[in-house]
View 1 (tube, helix red, strand yellow):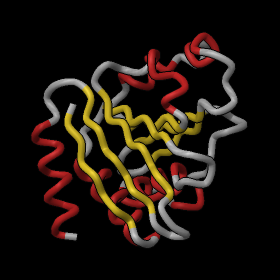
View 2 (cartoon, helix red, strand yellow):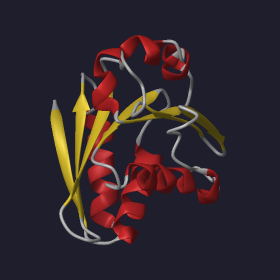
View 3 (cartoon, helix red, strand yellow):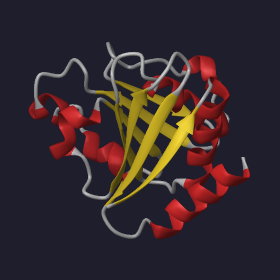
Length: 159
């Protein structure tokens, strides 16, 4: 597993990270988002969605519906595992169909259902380090991510 660390000093940096992810991540990528309440998990998905030509206002936390689908230039599936009791409850949602679709799939609170996620995935841990500052630790789990990680790093460096 290799990782990339990105410091967002303000919300516009989170938007920049989302734009880079929306461009660099290939279809059929599952992203596990991990962070405390209010860390910015949904905000990051909104930033990716904007790059995929999905209106930001359409992207809301799926806490009570468990999964939202957004369709734009790219499709995004957006899960929330916060209220789930166990892996079985997550599996009842049929996530494998979403993971196999030519889309980007985001799972908020992905650490709660990690055994249900694809072996090849991206994990993004978000740490709140200040009122507007966040540290994003992007870990590429599994093989074959070298080109994606290099492209993401290039996009973030060129801003």
